[in-house]
Amino acid sequence: MKVLYALYPGPDAAQDAVDSLRAAAADLKFDAKQIVIVSGEPHEGYEFTDSHTTSAPYRWAVLGGICGGTCGYLLTTISQKAYPLVTGGMSITPVWTNGIIVYEMTMLGAILTTLVTLLIGAGLPNFKGVITDPEIATGKILVGVVGPPESSQPELEKRLRQAGATQIKYASAPNS
Image 1 (cartoon, rainbow, N blue to C red):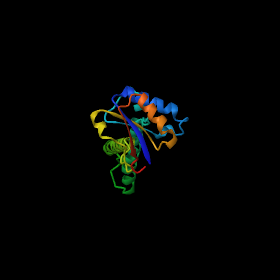
Image 2 (tube, rainbow, N blue to C red):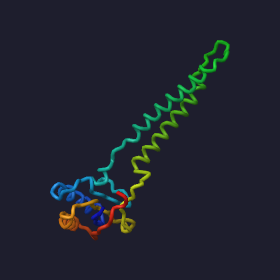
Image 3 (tube, one colour):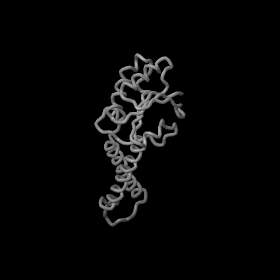
Image 4 (tube, rainbow, N blue to C red):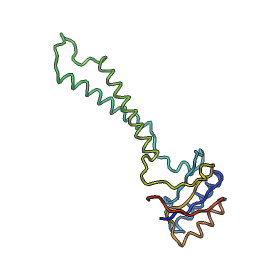
């Protein structure tokens, strides 16, 4: 599959290109999800950087903590009741000693859930490959379209140039 992309010197020009491509997506017969943006650094405050934000990791961490704490409580309570000991009238499941295990399991659940959320949000592991260009390392921003229709390529090139592209290139998409 072919990729048509352009390199931009800054985030303002890249945002103009993304806006132009999204506005033309229906007319040029491609889906706006085919638009690709790659940058070597974050550009906060631009719509093209926020378009992929979908996660609230603290919510998942709280859920993981609740699940971990519940598992810790069940582990201590069930294991102590499964092996009944003569305790001389004391409780068989003391709250203070079990609290340490419940606390540790709560933290383990929150940490593991946060780690999984981070990996999923970062798209790791990525076995499909990525679209890249050596110019990204020098601060340029790549904006392109994966699999554009042949008939719309001249118009796409025109729109990318109008947005301030320094270079326009074609490449093949890696393992799409």
